[in-house]
Structures are given as C-alpha cells and as structure tokens.
Image (cartoon, rainbow, N blue to C red):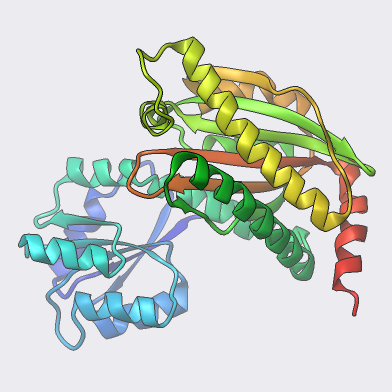
Length: 334
C-alpha cells in the first residue's frame, strides 16, 4: 500500500520539482494542493502521512495552514519548503508544529537527509502496519490495551524522569496483532539505519506470557551516561550496565503497572542481551525464531532536549490473547 503524500505549493514548477526530488525507492502516492485552503481540504480527504508545505501562498499561507492543523487536531508530519530563509521564519514554523525546513530550490541531498533524520519512511511503514492490522483487534479492546499501557508507561516514565532529572516524552502506544513476518518489519522500522543494542526479558503469570524487548539507539549512550553522572571512558562493558539499568526501570515499571491493573501478577525472567552495537535487522534475524503470532504493544520513549531514544515492545504470545481479552472485557462491563 503506497504512502499518501501531499505537496502544497502555488507554483506548479515547485510542486513538480519537489515530487521529482523524492526518493525513487519510496512507495508513495503523491497528491497536490495549490493553496492553503485546498491543503486543509486535501488533508481531511486523503489523510496524508507527510505534508510538504510552502509558506507564501494566496488565500491561506503556510503559517495559517500550520495553525489550522493544530487547531483542528489534524495528524500529519509537516516539512516546510520555502524560499523565505529568515531565521525567524524557520523558528516560527517549528513552533507551529513543522518537523523541519527545506530551502527552495529543493536540494535532493538535503531532502534525503531530512527524510532519514526524522525516520519519515519508517514512520510511514509503521503507520501502514497499524492501519492494515487494525481490523484484527476490536476497537474497544484496543482502546483498553492502549489505556492500560498509558497508565503503565506513565509510571515507568516517572521513574526514569526522577532518576535522570529530565522530562520524558510519552507517546501514544501502538497496539497490533502481528504475524512473525510483520513483527520483523515492525522491529526493523524502528531505526533501520542506526546501530542498536537490545535486551529481552520474559514474563509469565495468570495464563499470560510473553517477552519485553528494549532497544536503545547506540547514539544515546553518551547522553545517558552524562545524565547518570557516569565518569570515565565508555566501553562495551559499562554501556551494557547502562542498558541494563534503563531496561530494569522501564520493563519492570511497565509490567508492574499492567499487572496491577489486570490483577494478574507477573513473574519476570532474567534479562538477556539480544545484541550490542548492531543493526536492528541483525537483532531480529538472530531472535525472531522465538516469536510467532503475537499481540505487540510498542512504546517509544524520548527525553526532551537530549538525543536519547529507546523503544520498548511487549510481545504477548498467541496463547495469551484469549486470557487478555477476557480480562479487558471484564473491565468494559458496567
């Protein structure tokens, strides 16, 4: 399924130039808008995942489009493409919710750099996975899984925030039923271009079992060490210690939060290192033989003003789905 993309610019030349600058290997469906009013209409109509937005346009300019997106709670990743290169223009569009800024005329290499920097193609893969697999879960059941996870990940985020004295950005968790091949794709979409270290920890209790996977981008270790007042040169040994510390906090708190809400105590196994300083693809290839059809809950943690990103995935076995469904249906009863 092609990723829907919207290009909004009053110049036909600029629209075509940008379209030709997009990566050739990207499976996309491009739509166009000639002004801000059309742009808002197209966002509502086609629900694009990415918007490339000009600033200077008739009827409704790019600033007004960004404001409307916020006010109307429209969900689209927006990259501004403009000839207005004033620092204040750049700052203003970022404050209005754009994720980045490209100067006209659009440079192919700069565009590719921004797409890679923000993981736009990977986000699109993840979004398509959520959309294509959505019908496998009853909407009410998914809503409960998400709410239970929201509470649990909030408790984990609080512990991490207190430990590091930072503000932890909490996402909306992704909840899907995945086959092993789809899980492979979902894990690789986290960050296929970065070196990653991972830990997994099994859990079981009350007819439910699974594994918790924590993946930490290797570029995060330096800042994690600084926030934890680590002194000395980083090496594989102390990086592993830092990884274990983070995983113990996040995995332990999330599982505790879920078990309390479900009234289902979990016993946790010993954490196992999936790999250090390797591609996500290698982590998946080495470990995926253990994973079959599963209920997958993905939580992507970030820390404000720091280049620290980690993904926590809870993978419940297929045999656990019936018990979990019974538990959450009980929570829905009046």
